[in-house]
Length: 466
Image (cartoon, rainbow, N blue to C red; front, side, top):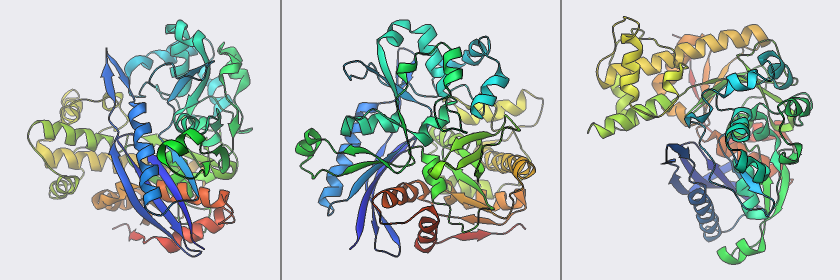
Protein backbone atom coordinates (compact mmCIF):
# COMPACT_ATOMS: atom_id res chain seq x y z
CA UNK A 1 0.00 0.00 0.00
CA UNK A 2 1.29 3.45 -0.94
CA UNK A 3 2.56 5.74 1.83
CA UNK A 4 1.77 9.45 1.52
CA UNK A 5 3.60 12.08 3.54
CA UNK A 6 3.14 15.84 3.58
CA UNK A 7 6.40 17.80 3.31
CA UNK A 8 6.20 21.47 4.25
CA UNK A 9 9.29 23.37 3.12
CA UNK A 10 9.76 26.99 4.19
CA UNK A 11 12.57 28.68 2.28
CA UNK A 12 13.89 32.15 3.00
CA UNK A 13 11.85 33.68 0.15
CA UNK A 14 9.03 31.20 -0.51
CA UNK A 15 7.43 28.04 0.80
CA UNK A 16 5.47 25.09 -0.48
CA UNK A 17 3.45 22.10 0.62
CA UNK A 18 4.22 18.92 -1.32
CA UNK A 19 2.46 15.58 -1.15
CA UNK A 20 5.03 12.80 -1.50
CA UNK A 21 3.87 9.29 -2.40
CA UNK A 22 6.08 6.21 -1.98
CA UNK A 23 4.90 3.12 -3.86
CA UNK A 24 7.62 0.79 -2.56
CA UNK A 25 9.99 1.65 -5.40
CA UNK A 26 10.05 5.39 -6.05
CA UNK A 27 8.99 8.64 -4.43
CA UNK A 28 6.66 10.82 -6.45
CA UNK A 29 6.09 14.44 -5.41
CA UNK A 30 3.16 16.71 -6.17
CA UNK A 31 3.05 20.40 -5.39
CA UNK A 32 -0.19 21.34 -3.62
CA UNK A 33 0.45 24.85 -2.39
CA UNK A 34 3.13 27.49 -2.99
CA UNK A 35 3.36 30.83 -1.24
CA UNK A 36 5.56 33.86 -0.81
CA UNK A 37 7.69 34.38 2.30
CA UNK A 38 8.31 38.11 2.52
CA UNK A 39 9.68 39.66 5.71
CA UNK A 40 8.07 42.75 7.20
CA UNK A 41 9.97 45.87 8.30
CA UNK A 42 8.45 47.64 11.33
CA UNK A 43 10.18 50.52 13.12
CA UNK A 44 13.50 49.57 11.59
CA UNK A 45 13.32 45.89 12.57
CA UNK A 46 12.99 43.13 9.98
CA UNK A 47 10.57 40.39 11.11
CA UNK A 48 9.36 37.09 9.73
CA UNK A 49 5.57 37.13 9.21
CA UNK A 50 5.24 33.92 11.20
CA UNK A 51 1.45 34.00 11.62
CA UNK A 52 1.01 34.30 7.86
CA UNK A 53 3.40 31.35 7.41
CA UNK A 54 1.39 29.31 9.90
CA UNK A 55 -1.77 30.15 7.94
CA UNK A 56 -0.07 28.89 4.75
CA UNK A 57 0.95 25.71 6.60
CA UNK A 58 -2.67 25.07 7.55
CA UNK A 59 -3.76 25.78 3.97
CA UNK A 60 -1.29 23.12 2.80
CA UNK A 61 -2.74 20.61 5.27
CA UNK A 62 -6.27 21.22 3.97
CA UNK A 63 -5.17 20.85 0.36
CA UNK A 64 -3.39 17.60 1.23
CA UNK A 65 -6.57 16.26 2.83
CA UNK A 66 -8.53 17.15 -0.32
CA UNK A 67 -5.85 15.43 -2.43
CA UNK A 68 -6.46 12.11 -0.68
CA UNK A 69 -4.92 12.42 2.77
CA UNK A 70 -1.51 11.68 4.28
CA UNK A 71 0.19 9.52 6.89
CA UNK A 72 2.41 12.16 8.54
CA UNK A 73 3.63 15.76 8.34
CA UNK A 74 7.19 17.11 8.35
CA UNK A 75 8.36 20.74 8.45
CA UNK A 76 11.74 22.15 7.47
CA UNK A 77 12.90 25.78 7.37
CA UNK A 78 16.00 27.97 7.11
CA UNK A 79 18.36 27.94 10.11
CA UNK A 80 19.40 30.05 13.12
CA UNK A 81 16.17 32.06 13.78
CA UNK A 82 13.83 31.53 16.72
CA UNK A 83 10.90 32.80 18.74
CA UNK A 84 10.66 33.35 22.48
CA UNK A 85 7.81 31.65 24.38
CA UNK A 86 6.63 32.83 27.80
CA UNK A 87 5.71 30.63 30.78
CA UNK A 88 2.08 30.54 29.58
CA UNK A 89 3.17 29.10 26.23
CA UNK A 90 2.54 32.33 24.32
CA UNK A 91 4.90 33.72 21.68
CA UNK A 92 6.32 37.04 22.92
CA UNK A 93 6.79 38.63 19.49
CA UNK A 94 7.28 37.79 15.84
CA UNK A 95 10.69 36.21 15.19
CA UNK A 96 13.33 38.62 13.89
CA UNK A 97 14.83 37.93 10.46
CA UNK A 98 18.47 36.86 10.33
CA UNK A 99 19.14 39.67 7.81
CA UNK A 100 18.13 42.28 10.38
CA UNK A 101 21.09 44.49 11.31
CA UNK A 102 20.73 44.11 15.08
CA UNK A 103 23.58 41.60 15.35
CA UNK A 104 26.18 43.50 13.28
CA UNK A 105 28.33 44.26 16.38
CA UNK A 106 27.35 41.29 18.54
CA UNK A 107 30.37 39.13 17.73
CA UNK A 108 32.57 41.79 19.34
CA UNK A 109 30.36 41.82 22.45
CA UNK A 110 30.46 38.04 22.74
CA UNK A 111 34.23 37.83 22.15
CA UNK A 112 34.60 40.19 25.12
CA UNK A 113 33.16 37.39 27.27
CA UNK A 114 34.63 34.30 25.63
CA UNK A 115 37.25 34.02 22.91
CA UNK A 116 36.56 33.16 19.30
CA UNK A 117 38.84 30.13 19.62
CA UNK A 118 36.88 28.80 22.61
CA UNK A 119 33.58 29.18 20.77
CA UNK A 120 34.83 27.28 17.72
CA UNK A 121 36.37 24.57 19.90
CA UNK A 122 33.02 24.17 21.68
CA UNK A 123 30.74 24.24 18.62
CA UNK A 124 32.75 23.83 15.39
CA UNK A 125 30.50 26.38 13.68
CA UNK A 126 31.53 29.03 11.13
CA UNK A 127 31.35 32.60 12.46
CA UNK A 128 28.42 34.52 11.00
CA UNK A 129 26.80 37.62 12.50
CA UNK A 130 23.33 36.12 12.42
CA UNK A 131 24.05 32.86 14.27
CA UNK A 132 21.60 32.09 17.06
CA UNK A 133 24.27 32.70 19.69
CA UNK A 134 24.56 36.39 18.71
CA UNK A 135 20.82 36.86 18.25
CA UNK A 136 20.11 35.41 21.69
CA UNK A 137 22.87 37.47 23.30
CA UNK A 138 21.42 40.58 21.65
CA UNK A 139 18.08 39.89 23.33
CA UNK A 140 19.81 39.26 26.66
CA UNK A 141 21.96 42.41 26.55
CA UNK A 142 19.69 44.85 24.73
CA UNK A 143 16.12 43.66 25.35
CA UNK A 144 16.32 42.59 29.03
CA UNK A 145 12.56 42.84 29.64
CA UNK A 146 11.82 40.43 26.79
CA UNK A 147 14.66 38.15 27.88
CA UNK A 148 13.37 37.92 31.45
CA UNK A 149 9.82 37.17 30.28
CA UNK A 150 11.02 34.29 28.08
CA UNK A 151 10.58 30.73 29.32
CA UNK A 152 11.89 28.96 26.20
CA UNK A 153 13.43 29.85 22.88
CA UNK A 154 12.24 27.66 20.01
CA UNK A 155 13.71 27.45 16.50
CA UNK A 156 11.38 28.24 13.59
CA UNK A 157 10.43 24.70 12.42
CA UNK A 158 10.03 23.60 16.03
CA UNK A 159 7.84 26.66 16.63
CA UNK A 160 5.50 25.67 13.79
CA UNK A 161 5.43 22.09 15.11
CA UNK A 162 4.65 23.52 18.58
CA UNK A 163 1.64 25.34 17.11
CA UNK A 164 0.45 22.00 15.69
CA UNK A 165 1.18 19.70 18.65
CA UNK A 166 1.88 21.74 21.79
CA UNK A 167 5.31 20.11 22.17
CA UNK A 168 8.29 22.33 23.00
CA UNK A 169 11.40 20.63 21.62
CA UNK A 170 14.30 21.39 19.32
CA UNK A 171 15.27 19.02 16.52
CA UNK A 172 19.00 18.35 16.41
CA UNK A 173 19.90 19.45 12.88
CA UNK A 174 18.23 22.85 13.27
CA UNK A 175 19.67 23.34 16.77
CA UNK A 176 23.17 22.73 15.41
CA UNK A 177 23.01 25.71 13.03
CA UNK A 178 23.12 28.31 15.80
CA UNK A 179 26.64 27.91 17.30
CA UNK A 180 25.22 26.70 20.61
CA UNK A 181 25.48 22.90 20.17
CA UNK A 182 28.48 20.62 20.71
CA UNK A 183 28.65 18.44 17.56
CA UNK A 184 30.54 15.72 19.46
CA UNK A 185 27.67 15.11 21.87
CA UNK A 186 24.76 16.51 19.86
CA UNK A 187 23.60 18.33 23.00
CA UNK A 188 23.66 21.99 23.94
CA UNK A 189 27.17 23.33 24.60
CA UNK A 190 26.37 23.86 28.28
CA UNK A 191 29.79 25.15 29.35
CA UNK A 192 29.64 27.83 26.64
CA UNK A 193 26.05 28.68 27.58
CA UNK A 194 27.04 29.08 31.23
CA UNK A 195 30.01 31.32 30.38
CA UNK A 196 27.71 33.57 28.34
CA UNK A 197 25.36 33.86 31.30
CA UNK A 198 22.39 32.49 29.38
CA UNK A 199 19.69 30.80 31.46
CA UNK A 200 19.78 27.03 31.05
CA UNK A 201 16.02 26.75 31.36
CA UNK A 202 15.61 28.68 28.09
CA UNK A 203 16.94 25.72 26.14
CA UNK A 204 14.40 23.06 25.14
CA UNK A 205 15.08 19.34 24.94
CA UNK A 206 16.91 18.33 21.75
CA UNK A 207 15.40 15.44 19.78
CA UNK A 208 16.78 13.42 16.86
CA UNK A 209 15.55 13.75 13.29
CA UNK A 210 13.05 10.98 12.71
CA UNK A 211 11.47 11.50 16.13
CA UNK A 212 7.86 12.56 16.56
CA UNK A 213 6.76 15.82 18.17
CA UNK A 214 3.43 14.12 18.79
CA UNK A 215 0.07 13.92 17.08
CA UNK A 216 -1.66 16.76 15.28
CA UNK A 217 -3.66 18.50 18.01
CA UNK A 218 -7.43 18.09 18.40
CA UNK A 219 -8.11 21.81 17.99
CA UNK A 220 -6.24 21.85 14.68
CA UNK A 221 -7.95 18.67 13.49
CA UNK A 222 -11.36 20.14 14.33
CA UNK A 223 -10.55 23.45 12.67
CA UNK A 224 -9.22 21.90 9.47
CA UNK A 225 -11.48 18.82 9.54
CA UNK A 226 -8.59 16.39 9.18
CA UNK A 227 -7.60 13.16 10.90
CA UNK A 228 -4.80 13.30 13.47
CA UNK A 229 -1.41 12.11 12.19
CA UNK A 230 2.09 12.25 13.67
CA UNK A 231 4.10 15.43 13.15
CA UNK A 232 7.61 14.16 12.46
CA UNK A 233 10.76 16.04 13.39
CA UNK A 234 12.42 15.60 10.00
CA UNK A 235 15.84 17.10 9.36
CA UNK A 236 14.28 20.43 10.20
CA UNK A 237 17.10 22.53 8.77
CA UNK A 238 16.38 22.71 5.06
CA UNK A 239 20.00 22.03 4.15
CA UNK A 240 20.03 18.92 6.33
CA UNK A 241 16.93 17.68 4.50
CA UNK A 242 18.57 18.49 1.16
CA UNK A 243 21.71 16.52 2.08
CA UNK A 244 19.56 13.46 2.85
CA UNK A 245 18.53 13.56 -0.81
CA UNK A 246 22.06 13.41 -2.26
CA UNK A 247 21.68 10.41 -4.61
CA UNK A 248 25.09 8.88 -3.97
CA UNK A 249 25.82 5.30 -2.98
CA UNK A 250 29.38 6.30 -2.04
CA UNK A 251 30.31 8.43 0.96
CA UNK A 252 33.16 10.06 -1.00
CA UNK A 253 31.14 12.95 -2.35
CA UNK A 254 30.87 16.70 -2.04
CA UNK A 255 27.67 18.67 -2.46
CA UNK A 256 26.43 22.17 -3.11
CA UNK A 257 22.93 22.84 -1.89
CA UNK A 258 21.95 25.70 -4.18
CA UNK A 259 19.30 28.17 -3.21
CA UNK A 260 19.18 31.54 -1.48
CA UNK A 261 22.36 30.29 0.19
CA UNK A 262 24.92 27.93 -1.28
CA UNK A 263 26.07 25.33 1.24
CA UNK A 264 29.13 23.50 -0.01
CA UNK A 265 30.35 20.52 1.95
CA UNK A 266 30.53 16.80 2.54
CA UNK A 267 29.28 14.24 5.04
CA UNK A 268 31.51 13.05 7.88
CA UNK A 269 31.11 10.62 10.74
CA UNK A 270 32.86 12.92 13.24
CA UNK A 271 33.31 16.71 13.48
CA UNK A 272 36.51 18.33 12.24
CA UNK A 273 37.88 21.38 14.06
CA UNK A 274 40.85 22.22 11.82
CA UNK A 275 39.49 25.34 10.12
CA UNK A 276 37.00 27.92 11.48
CA UNK A 277 35.96 28.83 7.92
CA UNK A 278 34.08 25.51 7.78
CA UNK A 279 31.14 24.48 9.90
CA UNK A 280 30.14 21.24 11.64
CA UNK A 281 26.36 21.02 11.49
CA UNK A 282 24.57 17.82 12.43
CA UNK A 283 22.80 15.68 9.84
CA UNK A 284 20.49 12.69 9.91
CA UNK A 285 21.73 9.81 12.09
CA UNK A 286 24.02 12.35 13.79
CA UNK A 287 26.32 12.50 10.80
CA UNK A 288 28.25 15.75 10.40
CA UNK A 289 27.48 18.16 7.59
CA UNK A 290 30.95 19.64 7.18
CA UNK A 291 30.37 22.66 4.99
CA UNK A 292 30.95 26.28 4.17
CA UNK A 293 28.21 28.90 3.93
CA UNK A 294 28.37 30.90 0.69
CA UNK A 295 26.11 33.83 -0.10
CA UNK A 296 24.43 32.00 -3.00
CA UNK A 297 21.64 32.97 -5.40
CA UNK A 298 20.38 35.60 -2.95
CA UNK A 299 22.53 38.04 -4.97
CA UNK A 300 20.70 37.14 -8.19
CA UNK A 301 17.31 37.19 -6.41
CA UNK A 302 17.93 40.66 -4.97
CA UNK A 303 19.26 41.88 -8.33
CA UNK A 304 16.09 40.72 -10.04
CA UNK A 305 14.04 42.57 -7.44
CA UNK A 306 16.01 45.76 -8.14
CA UNK A 307 15.63 45.38 -11.90
CA UNK A 308 11.89 44.79 -11.49
CA UNK A 309 11.63 48.12 -9.62
CA UNK A 310 13.42 49.79 -12.53
CA UNK A 311 10.86 48.38 -14.96
CA UNK A 312 13.24 45.72 -16.31
CA UNK A 313 10.99 42.71 -15.77
CA UNK A 314 12.89 39.55 -16.62
CA UNK A 315 12.51 35.95 -15.53
CA UNK A 316 15.48 34.07 -14.09
CA UNK A 317 15.85 32.14 -17.36
CA UNK A 318 16.02 35.40 -19.31
CA UNK A 319 18.60 36.81 -16.91
CA UNK A 320 20.73 33.67 -17.30
CA UNK A 321 20.40 33.84 -21.10
CA UNK A 322 21.70 37.41 -21.09
CA UNK A 323 24.57 36.36 -18.82
CA UNK A 324 25.46 33.52 -21.17
CA UNK A 325 26.01 35.99 -24.03
CA UNK A 326 28.68 37.85 -22.06
CA UNK A 327 32.38 37.04 -21.92
CA UNK A 328 33.16 34.99 -18.82
CA UNK A 329 35.80 35.60 -16.18
CA UNK A 330 36.03 39.39 -16.60
CA UNK A 331 34.39 40.51 -13.35
CA UNK A 332 35.11 38.36 -10.28
CA UNK A 333 34.16 39.64 -6.82
CA UNK A 334 33.91 38.24 -3.29
CA UNK A 335 30.32 37.02 -2.99
CA UNK A 336 30.76 36.64 0.78
CA UNK A 337 31.59 40.31 1.33
CA UNK A 338 29.30 41.77 4.02
CA UNK A 339 28.21 44.33 1.41
CA UNK A 340 25.95 41.66 -0.12
CA UNK A 341 24.38 40.41 3.10
CA UNK A 342 21.45 42.81 3.47
CA UNK A 343 18.50 43.71 1.22
CA UNK A 344 18.97 46.59 -1.20
CA UNK A 345 20.03 47.58 -4.70
CA UNK A 346 22.24 44.59 -5.39
CA UNK A 347 23.29 45.46 -8.98
CA UNK A 348 24.58 48.81 -7.75
CA UNK A 349 26.40 47.11 -4.87
CA UNK A 350 28.08 44.72 -7.31
CA UNK A 351 29.20 47.67 -9.44
CA UNK A 352 30.38 49.61 -6.40
CA UNK A 353 32.46 46.65 -5.22
CA UNK A 354 34.60 47.07 -8.35
CA UNK A 355 34.50 50.89 -8.50
CA UNK A 356 35.59 51.26 -4.86
CA UNK A 357 38.67 49.17 -5.70
CA UNK A 358 39.54 51.17 -8.81
CA UNK A 359 38.55 48.36 -11.15
CA UNK A 360 36.34 48.37 -14.28
CA UNK A 361 32.75 47.50 -13.30
CA UNK A 362 30.17 45.40 -15.15
CA UNK A 363 27.43 47.30 -17.01
CA UNK A 364 23.85 46.21 -17.66
CA UNK A 365 21.86 43.14 -16.73
CA UNK A 366 23.89 40.62 -18.75
CA UNK A 367 27.33 41.65 -17.49
CA UNK A 368 26.22 41.99 -13.87
CA UNK A 369 24.47 38.60 -13.90
CA UNK A 370 27.51 36.96 -15.57
CA UNK A 371 29.71 38.55 -12.91
CA UNK A 372 27.53 37.02 -10.17
CA UNK A 373 27.52 33.53 -11.72
CA UNK A 374 31.27 33.63 -12.41
CA UNK A 375 31.99 34.84 -8.88
CA UNK A 376 29.84 32.11 -7.32
CA UNK A 377 31.68 29.46 -9.35
CA UNK A 378 35.04 30.89 -8.27
CA UNK A 379 33.93 30.82 -4.64
CA UNK A 380 32.82 27.20 -5.11
CA UNK A 381 36.30 26.40 -6.46
CA UNK A 382 38.05 27.93 -3.45
CA UNK A 383 35.72 26.21 -0.99
CA UNK A 384 36.10 22.86 -2.79
CA UNK A 385 39.88 23.12 -2.76
CA UNK A 386 39.75 23.76 0.98
CA UNK A 387 37.33 20.90 1.52
CA UNK A 388 39.53 18.45 -0.37
CA UNK A 389 42.60 19.47 1.65
CA UNK A 390 40.72 19.07 4.93
CA UNK A 391 38.77 15.88 4.20
CA UNK A 392 40.22 14.26 1.06
CA UNK A 393 36.74 13.82 -0.42
CA UNK A 394 36.78 14.67 -4.11
CA UNK A 395 35.08 11.91 -6.10
CA UNK A 396 32.20 14.00 -7.48
CA UNK A 397 30.21 17.15 -6.86
CA UNK A 398 26.46 16.81 -6.39
CA UNK A 399 24.53 20.03 -6.97
CA UNK A 400 21.07 19.86 -5.42
CA UNK A 401 18.20 22.28 -4.97
CA UNK A 402 16.40 24.84 -7.09
CA UNK A 403 19.64 26.56 -8.11
CA UNK A 404 20.48 23.70 -10.48
CA UNK A 405 17.89 25.16 -12.86
CA UNK A 406 20.59 27.75 -13.61
CA UNK A 407 22.41 25.46 -16.02
CA UNK A 408 25.07 28.11 -16.67
CA UNK A 409 26.04 27.94 -12.99
CA UNK A 410 26.26 24.13 -13.14
CA UNK A 411 28.60 24.29 -16.15
CA UNK A 412 30.73 26.99 -14.58
CA UNK A 413 30.95 24.93 -11.38
CA UNK A 414 32.21 21.84 -13.23
CA UNK A 415 34.85 23.93 -14.98
CA UNK A 416 35.90 25.78 -11.83
CA UNK A 417 36.12 22.74 -9.51
CA UNK A 418 37.46 20.36 -12.20
CA UNK A 419 35.02 17.76 -10.89
CA UNK A 420 32.12 16.03 -12.64
CA UNK A 421 28.93 17.71 -11.47
CA UNK A 422 25.73 15.69 -11.04
CA UNK A 423 22.77 18.03 -10.85
CA UNK A 424 19.65 16.79 -9.10
CA UNK A 425 17.28 16.55 -7.47
CA UNK A 426 16.01 20.11 -7.83
CA UNK A 427 13.42 19.42 -5.11
CA UNK A 428 16.14 18.17 -2.79
CA UNK A 429 14.78 19.59 0.44
CA UNK A 430 11.28 18.23 -0.11
CA UNK A 431 12.51 14.76 -1.06
CA UNK A 432 14.86 14.66 1.93
CA UNK A 433 12.03 15.79 4.21
CA UNK A 434 9.81 13.03 2.81
CA UNK A 435 12.56 10.40 3.13
CA UNK A 436 13.00 11.06 6.87
CA UNK A 437 9.22 10.82 7.36
CA UNK A 438 9.18 7.51 5.49
CA UNK A 439 11.97 6.22 7.73
CA UNK A 440 10.08 7.43 10.80
CA UNK A 441 6.89 5.58 9.84
CA UNK A 442 8.93 2.43 8.98
CA UNK A 443 8.22 2.50 5.24
CA UNK A 444 11.96 2.88 4.47
CA UNK A 445 14.71 1.12 6.43
CA UNK A 446 17.52 3.67 6.69
CA UNK A 447 19.43 6.50 5.02
CA UNK A 448 21.33 4.17 2.69
CA UNK A 449 18.09 2.66 1.38
CA UNK A 450 16.49 6.10 1.16
CA UNK A 451 19.29 7.38 -1.08
CA UNK A 452 18.93 4.38 -3.39
CA UNK A 453 15.20 5.08 -3.66
CA UNK A 454 15.85 8.77 -4.35
CA UNK A 455 18.36 7.90 -7.07
CA UNK A 456 15.68 5.77 -8.76
CA UNK A 457 13.11 8.53 -8.35
CA UNK A 458 14.92 11.49 -9.95
CA UNK A 459 16.79 12.23 -13.15
CA UNK A 460 20.32 13.58 -12.88
CA UNK A 461 22.12 15.78 -15.39
CA UNK A 462 25.89 15.39 -15.73
CA UNK A 463 28.22 18.31 -16.38
CA UNK A 464 31.86 17.46 -17.13
CA UNK A 465 34.75 19.93 -16.94
CA UNK A 466 35.52 21.37 -20.38
